[in-house]
Image 1 (cartoon, rainbow, N blue to C red):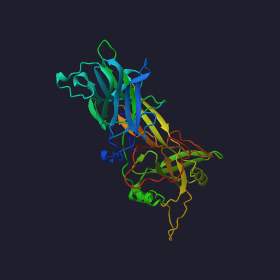
Image 2: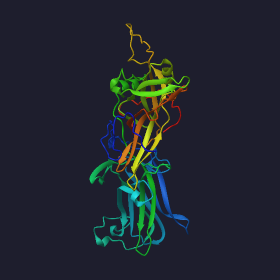
Image 3: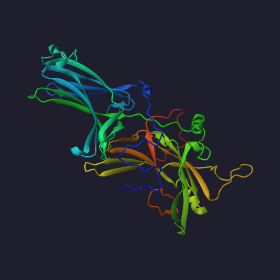
Image 4: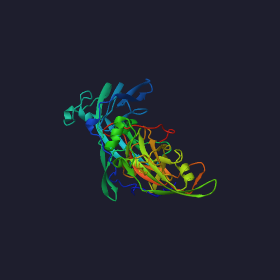
Length: 436
C-alpha cells in the first residue's frame, strides 16, 4: 500500500535520514542500570560417536527479557563462557568470539548490511597455555600441542550505545543509536544480533562454528510530564484537560470531518480538535492520554459523532527501509482503537455562578490508547526506521456515513522503554481489545 500523506501532521520527515528527535526522549545513564537477575542459555556442538557435547557456548541473558533467546539490556555487557570437553586430541589453532549486528531487507547480499562487528580472540596458540593464556607477545610461550581435556574461556563484551556508519547518506558519516532486535514473520525487514564462536584449524581441516542470536534492548525514557499531570498521578486523581493544563498537552488545529446521516442523506460538516499529553513520547506498556473536542451545528449528528464508540484513534507503527534496488518500502501496523468517555469541557461558557453550561454544538471526550508492553521502541539506523504516530481515522458511528477516505490526523510520537522521572503514570480505563 503506497504511503498517503495525512491532512495534518506536526512534522514532515525524510524517512531515511536521521534527524533530531522533536520529543524529549532521554537515555538513562549506565549508573541507572541495576544489577539484574540472569538466565543461562547454552548451545552445543556434539560428538556424534560419543553422544555428548565437545563444545558449549554459555550466555547469561537478562532474566526479565530473555524468553526464547538471551536478552541484553543497554549498559549490561554480553557475558558468558566457552567450554571444551575433548576426549581425544584436537588441533584447534584458535577460539574466536564475535558479535555482529545486521540490517536485513531481503535475501540477496545487497539487502544485508552490518552496522556493528565486534570480535575478540579467546585463545590462540600464540597465547600459550590454554588454561593460563598470555598476551601472545612472546614466541616462546606459543602452544604447540593438541588440545585435550576440559577448557573454559570466559568473556564479557560491552556493546557501544552508538555506532558510526561511514557514508550512510550522500557520503556523510552518520552516528546512530544501536536499535532493538526486530524480527517479525510477516515483515520483510529485520534487525538481528548474532553471536558466533569459531574454532579454527589448519587449512587441511574444516573449522567449526557455534552461533545464536540475541535480543538487544536499548534504553530510552520520555521527558517528565507537566507538574499538574505528575500531581494527578501522585494523588490518583483525574488528569486536567488541555484548557486547564495547557503545558501538559499538545493541542492540534481543528480539522474538518465530512459525512452524511444515512437516514436522511443530510450532509454533516463537523470539525474536531485532538489533544495529546506531552511530551509526545510514551513508555510501552502504559497509555497515551488524549482528548477530543467535536463541534457540529447539527444536534443529531453531534450526538452520533460524540458517542465514545465513534472516534477511531489508533497508534500506527511504520517500518521503513530501502531494498537492494534502493526502492523505499513502508509496512504499517495499527493498534486497537482508543477507549473514550465523555468529559466536561472547561472551555465552554459558564454562567455567573461558574456553573458549567452545556453547549448544544460542542462535546468533549477524553480517552487513552493502551500500549502493549512488548512494543519495539522507536529507532533509526542507516536506511531502516521504526516510527510511530497517533492516527485519527474517519468517524465510525451507526447512522453516519463518512465521506473522508484518508486519516484526518497523523501526529508523530515516539515509544520509549523506560518510565519518565517522577510518579508512575496511571491508566484510567481498560483497553477495548488487545492491540499493538
